[in-house]
Length: 588
Ligand code: ATP
Ligand code: MG
Image 1 (cartoon, protein in one colour):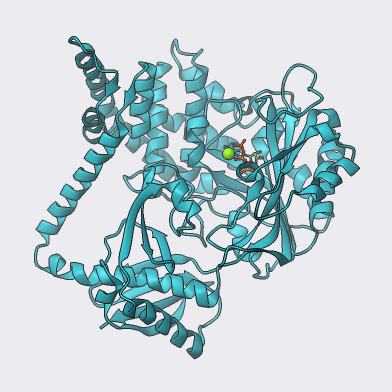
Image 2 (cartoon, helix red, strand yellow):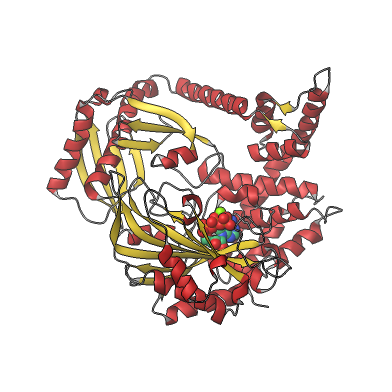
């Protein structure tokens, strides 16, 4: 039996011995990237260094990073996916490349962890119009004794990373899989066979995607790797899922102790264990449940856990009890759990009380809907968007709970209609708010819209002039001026400031229509839109583009045409905080 903290120690020691500096886990809230709600991988906090900034600890790094992937929420309940997990990683910033990286991965798995080679398989990039097949990696694996039939070549979706925006570093990756089946591992690696579990990914940042879409070899080539702590702990112990690993044992047994006659609802138990763990860690960052962004992710996790608590017949309130177990178990490695314990427990109790008030009635309403829909000559096979919206707005059911309830009855939801109702509702509450502040706010709107559009032009200009490391870190708009914070270390030179101003004004004089389109997050990402990624909820997003100059995911509203903006002027440039500059600008 190896525990997860023993595995962490082994990993960090192994890489420390090989010249890597051990760095601490960064926050779950991204500090240099407003395009994602949560840190989803070890590489994320390291992006500035992967694109060229010098890391104070050197060019070989290793760490354990706490991660949240809300995009995986629907997979939770299977054997291997969690919304909160820990990722082990090692990085080379322009130091070693494929050969050393693969050799170290291989040695760590087969020598340090003693995994028999016959249990392992790998995948490499197959090649496409942009970049050639990654034979180099495959040859290195073979030189270490991995059989050719255990190497699969896959396309961009599986074995390619980046760039993070429209341009920048990107490259092939090679993923390592473990045979988790009870039978002898098959000779040939079939990536479709679910018994092959991905445990580790090595990304090779080899190319730079340029503005004209070309892929050029990078001067500074980086390695970025990520190994799932829970998955690897599980396979080392011969477990066939992550919920039997040491950190989950007390959580799962705590849930079982509270459960009534629902103990064999394995999926519900797993969802409760994962979601409360994720919620506990998010709360430890000071986030509160709300209806917006991170707060709403948190609310959904807690409410879904409560709903599954009902399925396994737990008496409420229970969420804080499970959180206490998690805090006790994990606070040695994550002291923020202990120092924020009161806040975490308080918030969980409050949220559970709130949802308890409407949950029972909402479930009754749901049964009612089913009854009504089933009546008559043509019973409905769908829950209408309006019905779903009532459950959402009156009873506080997040959409995934409604979908799940419907699926349990073999029914679907009319999501298009739901989204329409949702939008109408938003419009209504916006108008109501605007009405309340009549005069002041109404007069301001045109001005703030224009400044908002200017902010998009400014971000695009900053990235073009200063580089792709520039991300928006915050903005604040009043009727008079725009304040804009962005990631950049040095003070801007007079020449840079003039160029930025000129570039924004050039776009204004071109009289460009500001285009707004709705699309899925994936499509937005493919277009290279700046904005919030990493969360597949709220599936369609608005993308505002200004010719090829600027493209951002954004709620709007914006000016219709850049010509309306007038003259853009930078009035101040100063430091905001470490690594962040602030610009104030006006339109006249
Ligand atoms: P999968 O295809 O299995 O979802 P992935 O391709 O999304 O994995 P990466 O983004 O390469 O995974 O992440 C690196 C490692 O982190 C994976 O090899 C895996 O061990 C771990 N990992 C990824 N997602 C999860 C998750 N949802 N829960 C637990 N571990 C995960
Ligand atoms: Mg995944």
